[in-house]
Amino acid sequence: MSITELEQNTLYYLELFVTDAVGDPVTGLSTTYKIYKSSDNSVVFSGSLIDVGDGVYKVSYLFDTLGQYRIIYTTPTNYTDEIETINVIERRASSIDVRRILGLVQENFRILNPVYDRLGNLVTCTIRIYPSASDVDADTNAIATYVVEATHNKTLMTGYKVKKL
Image 1 (tube, rainbow, N blue to C red):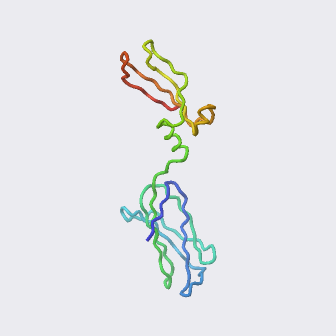
Image 2: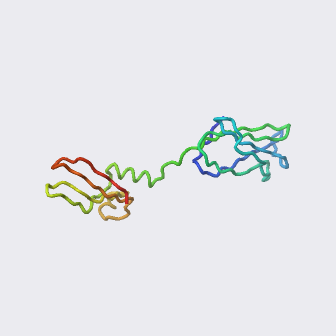
C-alpha cells in the first residue's frame, strides 16, 4: 500500500475507479468514503463520492490537520473496497525561504550603513541578501534586509542582534 504525502491545508481529490470483472468501467453506483485519523481510529469525515463518468467517482477534502489518515472507499457488493493512506505534513520551505537561508549563511550579501564606536567596533549596520553576485554588485532584487546591533566591552563584542526588516 502506498502513502500519499500532502502539505497541511491542501485540497485533495479523493478518487475511486470502479471496473467490472472484465475491466470495463462501471457507472451509476452508490459509493461512499470514510476518513479515519490513524492515531486513534476516529472517523474524521464521511460522505458520498460523485459519479463523474467512465467508472470514476470523486470528491474533494481539505486536510487541515497534521497527521496520518486512512480513507476507506466503499462500493456495493460485487466490487472491491479500496483503502488509501494520507500523511499530512507541515508546509515545506518555499524557494524564497531557501534563498533567504542561503543569504544568511553569508552567500551574496552586502553590509550597508555601518556605524562604529570610538574604538572602531561595529555598533550597527544593515545587511541585505541577494539571489546572485551580480545583484549584490548592482544592489538590486534584495531577498531580505536586516539591521544588526552589536554591544561591546572595550574591544570585545559581548553580543549582537539581527532583526529582519
